[in-house]
Image 1 (cartoon, rainbow, N blue to C red):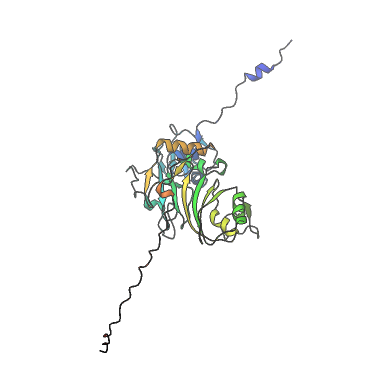
Image 2 (cartoon, rainbow, N blue to C red):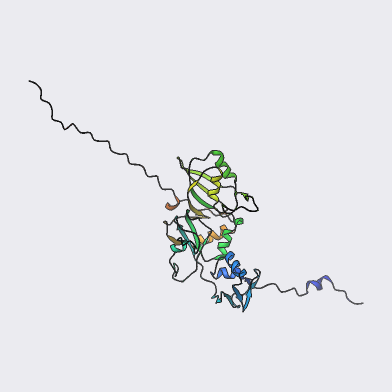
Length: 317
């Protein structure tokens, strides 16, 4: 009687070969070509070749150690040494590598051409700060970490000091804390003939200096286009100044226009934050993450009065 195949025989059958190697966008990011998101665009544009074949599919895998991978005809030389910096972006700089309007970019603040280490490392910013905003900006060539930090699902906390024109009502502040409806995308975008609206995630918000134009400290776990400005505009108040003072466990501790390399411990804390783990900043707040004390107006000295210069009259004898 012939034997019928049993379940054990089917289990021992050879399985289809699983894809080997890493995804191309991950290889390009590790090589410092671009962030993973930008690397995906490069692949879709047909600018990448693997062993002489042009690749345009994002799921393609390759072995960086064995395959010949070229971008725009140039052979990849393997992973760059990864670098991580904190930059204090001043107002009046755009957070891009180049600007068609010829405005200064954050790249102008890093050592030109050769990079801070003289090793021609290609750096790019993590996240954005608009032209008029200032403060903490991460610069790196680690596309993997940059991509992870930028994902909304990671919930990495970003802390800002925000100066507002006029005093918002308590009801408006409570709206921002709970989540407020704002326009999605750029301020001038209208999709399908209507405004595209979305509600923000809850935010931590506290008053740090009162007055006619108060300052608030605000912590977000997302980073939508011009989100801070939109949130306050929804409650009828214009944002005058924005300074980012915190990113995950990092706190701004370099002067405007300057940068420093992160320590291994700080890089590890960023990786933990990017994976959704809770990180706690140091209790001591650095100088550049604080508001400067307001300059007191000098009281003018009392005006001196002088006796009349007219000649005194003689007394009659």
